[in-house]
Amino acid sequence: MHRSFSIVALVLLLLLTPAFAAKRHHRPKHRPQVSKFFPAIPKVSVLLENQTADEMGAERFDNERDMQDAIVRGDLVAIVPNQYLAVSKKLPVNRWFARPVAVSFIQNLSLDFTVEFGVPLVVDSAVRPATVQKKLIRHNRCAAPWTGDRASTHERGTTIDISRNLTKAEYRWLVYQLLYYRAIGVVLVIEEKACFHIFVRGYGTVSLEEL
Image 1 (cartoon, one colour):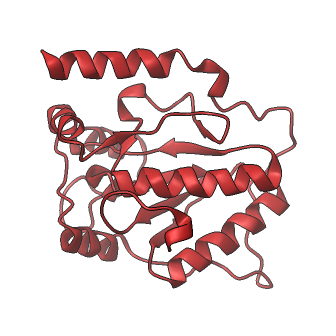
Image 2 (cartoon, helix red, strand yellow; image 1 turned 180 degrees about the vertical axis):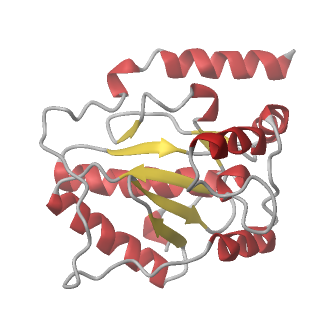
Image 3 (tube, one colour; image 1 turned 135 degrees about the vertical axis):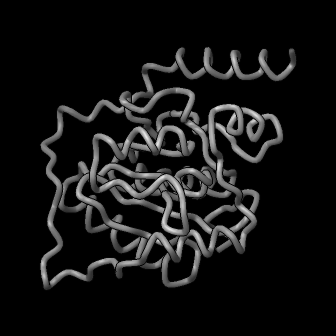
């Protein structure tokens, strides 16, 4: 009963925050392509992400029940949108969750981004159980498998996608930040057509000032 009440209360809280949804239509945007003169983010494999997740002890969530149990344990925490962080309206509310260290990283990164540009980063995707990933593959041939050593790390709650719907200046700033955090071993990043797929290492929560 306590678990059900907590989850329902959280969903209601999130639904009552429409003012913090991603509203960036008034600004001209595009998805910049990395030129040969710009430092591209080195490519990593989903296999490496899964190996790292295994080292972290980040298990895979097979279904919605596994996710809800993880929320009760505190292994998954909510991504609550505010003036410093937005969540795409296309992302179902029951998937506005990730592991604490991933949520903490994105919150701090988006705070710095908002201070710099006056608008927050937009979360496109977060935790995604294997049952959802399996359905996604039917519509998106580029999606990672739902099982195996190359399965999507969204199933582990370690990964958050950030929209690439950015201006050139915003894009450049974000790439340099991600390059830095990748260099010091905090994240693994895959730049996809529509988003930055960010795998966050570690446990618990972390402040960027502590890195």
